[in-house]
Image 1 (cartoon, rainbow, N blue to C red):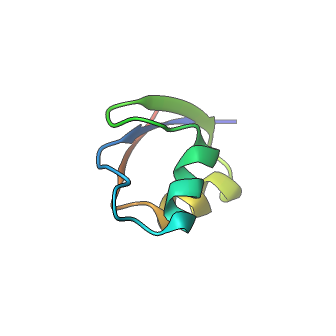
Image 2: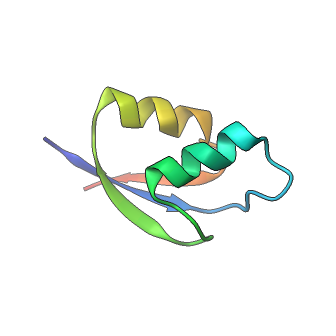
Image 3: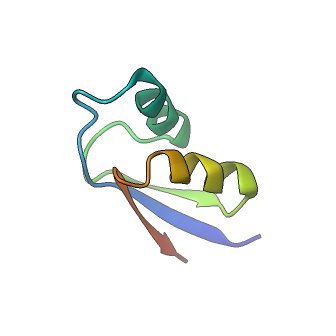
Length: 59
């Protein structure tokens, strides 16, 4: 399965709780932190919820 690199680019301050929890579920806690995840439909749905807070790159 392909992998994608997700980097948090914006803060979670003044964001809804659901968006904060989505970033936490992706494994992101700080700005400019990156994680590698499998490219699955579940992860893509989570990225769509917080697309304005993250940057996504294909590996």
